[in-house]
Length: 388
Image (cartoon, rainbow, N blue to C red; front, side):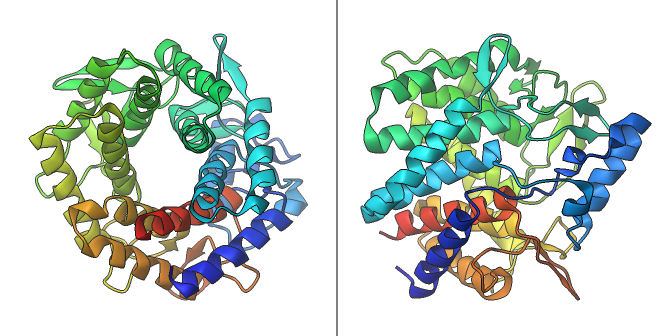
């Protein structure tokens, strides 16, 4: 285990636990006492976007308090369980049980199925969502945390809980038939096809199938993967989403490339099935990801072709992707370590937390719990596991 990374983990854990797993989020502006939504959709959208970019944390003035993030707690559950599995450190157990129980107690329900969603009201140009509105992405990361818990502790009640979680995906997430496959929606109201979100939804079904004797969802999972494979470009990249009505794609190239690659890898392993076309797509995607989205020193580019800001989410996902998929190229694990070391040297505070973004001439040092700390702890855990 790299000494620098090991020390970084200790410092990061100390910070996370000192905050009782609570923190701010880049998108939490509408938790303010000031009702931006009263003035319509656009003031709320602009307030969120301004605050996301603001390097001065004015949340206390707006009445925005630190909170437990549903997705963040899902990421932390997986990270803490992995660290326990790798170290045998029983001091991790109280944190693991606290996080697991918190997630169970803080479910929401949609059409009688339990699920998880936004920790704040959220507005975009395409929609307005109430606090708690569920998404396939939140649901998937939390189910992944519970799956890691089950694999380690073999708790049969958790197994039943995970299998029951497929209800939200099956009953509320739209299934959108597309040429060459099927897309699963980002949330119950989705009409567009977001590639990484579709795979996250399929990932939930793959976990449920993996835990039971019958593979109920194999045809649907294959259709979802085949659609995403079909939308890959010749150079190996995936854009962000596809609008089937307008037949246009949203060209956004960032950490979601890593999401897609990781999801494809996890799904094929969970269902015990792959094809030559799937493997070729993963290899091409990895080549693009490493060559075009990172410098050799481990610094990521933000959104191609833009270099800045260096976002902690990009850094963390790079560590995760190249650690988990190192079987495709032995050099990937060394590169994951390079990314980790660069991130520690350039983005970790003396207090242990990681900065949100490094710009060319300044840094946004706000310590977002979900966006930065949870992702980095999970990234370190994935690296640690791959390096063992």
